[in-house]
Amino acid sequence: MSILFGSGMTGGIENTAREAKFIEDLGYYNLSTGEHVRGAGNRGSMSMPVLGVAAGATEKIRLLSGILYLPLYHPVMASKLATTLDIASHGRLDLGIGVGGEHPTDFTSLEIPIERRGLRSNESLEILRKLWTEENVSYQGEIFNLDDVTLLPKPTQTPTIPIWVAGRQNVAMRRAVNYGDGWFPYFYSPERYKISFDYIVNYANETGRNLDGFKWAHYTFISLYETREKSAEMAAKRVGGSFRTGGNLAEIIGKYTVLGPVESAIERIQEYIDAGANHFMFNWMCDPADAHDQMKLAAEKILPHFN
Image (cartoon, rainbow, N blue to C red):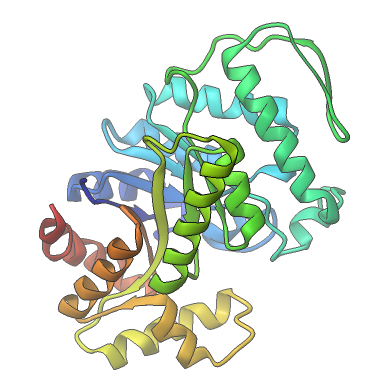
């Protein structure tokens, strides 16, 4: 089984085209960008338009929404946006989705009830599949109701655009089995990844879901400096400003971040592979000024080691 690596974009949305081409030229399998309604810089952008710019600047690299907050969208609009990008990119889109909740203002700004985000997402995932593959779609749910909706043209990819389900809890794992084509957790140690791997396999067996072709991805926080101490220090500066850790930051950094030097990073990635992961999306937890150098270092030293 091949091990695949992708890279998140860090250079600011105004530099999307140039950075996407840079990542493609380095040989990464895919690139990603996330989204938030409120924020600054990349954290204040929406994934679909950014990926659209990246698509136009590249030729082969796959494009991942990492992640799109599905409950913030009406499913018809989410379907149309994804289809448009898939066609425009000649079938290069992977739709990474999550339910959000860590940033409540994303929901309050759009007047969307945060407490119903899980149900909204589940119904949307059902609807997306139908709109991508059927015509005259009708649907009656607790949240959404559709009457005779047909969206044309259909996506380039068949049978549908691949869906990666992000999250951390068991409910997200079940969502990945019920509606998704892959599992895409974040802030996971190798030990916890193995637990999630076993949970998903067991749940799939119980429900009769065939996992052939299922993507076992990991949103990998990575910091590649010459020493573990410097790598952890720089990662802590990024994590501390971006996430509510709820614990000792130094302990969390060592447990959930792949840290340099390169040899140590390779050993840690192998632990995730042994736990079941086969696709790593690097999120660069370094000084932004060092990000492109670290992308290049990983492309030259880490990617060839596993391929």
